[in-house]
Image 1: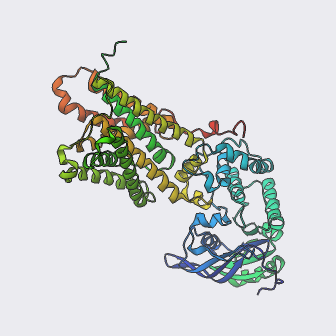
Image 2 (image 1 turned 90 degrees about the vertical axis):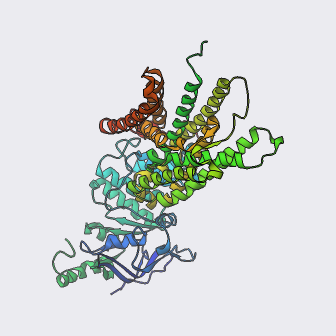
Image 3 (image 1 turned 120 degrees about the horizontal axis):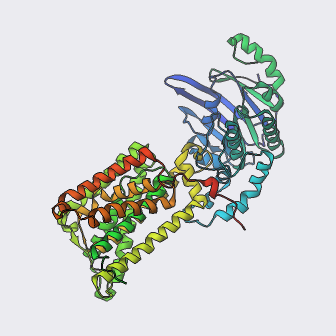
Length: 266
Length: 318
């Protein structure tokens, strides 16, 4: 089924082997061997309930695996890291980061707060470093300013108000972590069209120019066809098709006929 | 200046109020920022107080050390032991939900209260143990007590300063994020368990220091000092003042303390026979009623919410 040209694996990637997750006895994800991140931008598509979000959460270990393992390769020759035995925060620190499908926010933190939090390192946040604030502003302020210029918020010193602002904030927070492998879970849902295009443009740039491997779960298939270099198609917990976007686009209809209506979407 | 109204008794009550402000400030870090509702404050305070007393009384201090060094060393010991207790209790409870935290910390305070009565040789049992006079003598008893009030106030002021700085530091941001959406904080690479443990243990240690210092003032420490009253006063004061605000602890505890401890217990001329039995009980009921009333009418307290949208700005110069 795979027909893409062999790409030299020098990109950050995760390999998911023999990974199973079930909820209440129902198997939601059952992946034999899958590598995400061989291409700059990869799409992960499939019908509702195919296990896409669950698979991503297994990678970041925000849910635990029933069995199997997930390993992360930075692509720089450093030894592989077994993610499935690491705590979620340690995985994020290593550069494997996921945005949230459902809106997540800190109610009492302003937009600037939220972004400074994401950018700050562990050594900035020790209990006795009570004079560290000017340092984090001067260290990370410019980078945050760049994002705020690109994506203007209503009031960056206030709280994120609309769903769109919160969604955007979620994505920028993840970018400030300087991810090596970025998992985007329905990034466009809730974003205004203009902002959405700018986000996608930026993601594409990060992937091609900064060697960030991006995996996108998205229901809007136009985003997938335009953005991705490679597509994984999931159904019923398994990856059933892999290939270049045009090839998947052609064969997805076959899958749809085989599996029934509504599996692929428009 | 006529200081006659400032009786010895009033000074000790003021020391208690200042100590409670300190406890409420530490509770503010735990509950108001990190979301850990510690109902066992008096447990850590009690561990500090008793560890201080036991260390001071049962160790053969050389005469040549004088008064000050043994008291300071014992206070340090009480602080460390309370910090260790905080680590142990924290390890058990910080990842539980609010109910679990409430029960766990309340249970810990009950254990400390029980332990303080059991081992007679170490603690003096229910009668308690005499510890020390003030480690100095500057004249009258009142003058000595006033000096201790000054020292306690300095310590509590330092705690207040620390808490205010925490609000303006990356550490405070981390605590707030951990308290509000732990899963999200974790996904941003924040070690939330360790964050809560460090905060809980250092907070417990400081509560132990305040307990030890209050033990110095008491000269004689008894299990009766470790009742729920201290926890209630700190908790009610903080919630009344505004648990999300650093000054909430100060405003709330001073208000509640002056009202219930001074005005109600001393300055209102109730019949003498009420004072011994009824008034302390009625006072505890008033604490409970105040808590319910505040939570019903103004759950955010007098000072209200955090308002970081007004305070967090780029520092003037780097």
